[in-house]
Image (tube, rainbow, N blue to C red):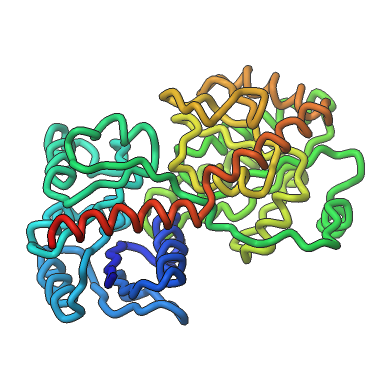
Length: 380
């Protein structure tokens, strides 16, 4: 098949949707398909065909994408949809009509209200429903969005994201050597937090919890792996500034290790070296969280928050430890208990390694290609 991918962000731009699009494209290309990418002009790739680009996502971009699709005789176009990645532009919702008769399969990454031009009210819901109904098929990357919109699109499938950190653990990797080299003292419990900093990640809650436990005498260190603002949401910069002020007020400068942007190999090394990955999402654990997928993929002991909806794959005390979202005392109690129990942490690590098979990229790409084939065959 000749497959086009339209993504509002793409590496080297920072953002989970762009990283997902790149890995998926490589997997489908490796399976023998021709992949063409349309993205922001800042996108770059040495091994993928970036054959179309836009300076903005206003109305003229639809005509540009239509000419791109026609010129390349694409069998199907996959829209990687997240409003923030398209500069909050409403025009992307009309892509299925703009490309007709070429079928558009939309992958919905994140339909939470803050992403979708806040204060739009009913217009927000109507625009997303419109896109789902007019797409040839819909893919949902998380249970919450699938439950919300299944029935609005036919067919629709739940296909989770995988980790965008894919480094293999070297046979000679030593967690203790890595920790000592980075200034972590023997006897300290090393906590890791990974991702782009925004209000939904619970990093402010984690900082307050670490400060209280350190004051009580628990020897904790916290590494913030990454922690940048990303390229999609300018509001993240403001949030990052507030976190800087919080670190100063809590006197955590000597406790924190802030890595900034790292290679995949360095991110993986910090995850392997940490005793516990702590990801207290404000809205609960979800398939849509790339940082959670990375922690699972790398076999971390994970402390996170209870999902908003039932997710059978996430099993409390077996493959992650779950606490209520927004409950700082519960987070503090769980963190103190897990920091004091290597046995519990090892149980969670083993569970995470078993869970990782659910989010294998080969499975993800295979399910996506199967849906594309069905759409193309029906249109033919």
